[in-house]
Image 1 (cartoon, helix red, strand yellow):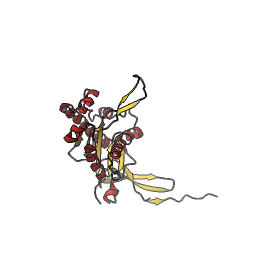
Image 2 (cartoon, rainbow, N blue to C red; image 1 turned 45 degrees about the vertical axis):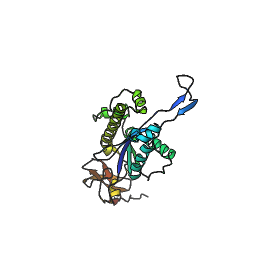
Image 3 (cartoon, one colour; image 1 turned 180 degrees about the horizontal axis):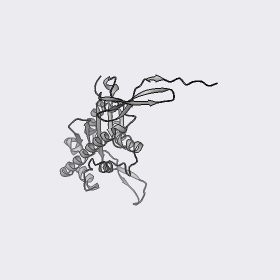
Image 4 (cartoon, one colour; image 1 turned 135 degrees about the vertical axis):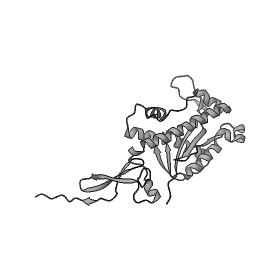
Length: 255
């Protein structure tokens, strides 16, 4: 048994380019080119280094075709193939599906199966914030903000291969990973359906959310017929309960 490999990642994509007849709520007549991955940043949970991969890292490919993201996707595939759990913000709907689409496009097989934790879904399920955007959550919780930039022109400059723009894009992407990790840890004690890290490590008494063995008994939880020991982690402060009941209460039958 080993500690699970938990990966945080975030992608940046190029826009679709297509033909339309007008400006407002138009149907696309045809695509000149479809979206592709510009870059991604990733980090192993509690690891120090942020991993970055971008189109211009693969100079020969980029010089021949500035939309060729095979090199970037191969690096991301290797990381996801190692991961037991993947943490994203809106990744269940966006990042993971986008990555899978490009894996399929490039003929890469499905990476090894992994569990997912989506902090946007967690924000919606357990809290009622005015906004569930990463930047707004970081601001509200005092954890930091996304990197400010010039907007869409930054994407255009990166697509043209401008080095200064790529430097800003990577800085922007890295800050998203830093924010994501902080927000995940802030949410951690509230997550009741977190993958059980104790099981991954073969620990009998461990916090399911963070895997720590530093857990204390904190009273009981009751069903109609059984009692379960409650535990609180002294590291992440998440609550859990024993799998087996402490006592079975047999209700008295009345005539």
